[in-house]
Image 1 (cartoon, rainbow, N blue to C red):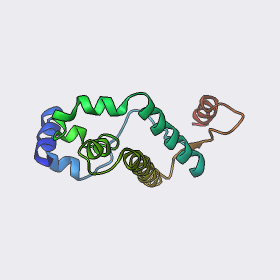
Image 2 (image 1 turned 60 degrees about the vertical axis):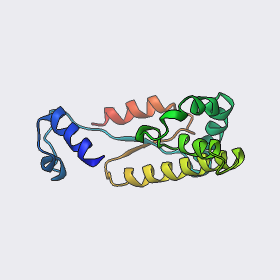
Image 3 (image 1 turned 180 degrees about the vertical axis):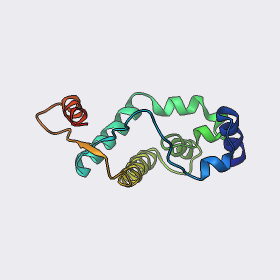
Length: 144
């Protein structure tokens, strides 16, 4: 997989993979302004749980059944699909699959938050504020 990814990167960019790995910061003709929506963790986790329930009620299991013959593809080794494949294989029951999707999605969200913390210039937007997120972002942009 890594070799394929490296070859794709080389083909798309014309650069050697080692150039990417050096992690040099590139000069840009513009300023990057980073944003993150700062959900309280309990609200975020409840939203994730509700989203998974909605995905199930809107046919996730049937969608995965339709992809079953392709389950070996790496693109289908994702949160949601892999747990439903486990259910379809009889390894776990449906409720366990749903709970695992919720847990793995929450884990993924936590890793994303950890990754974002590396940016010291990150601007957090408050989704619970009376001020819409869009207005908060515009107000931040105007400071630059």
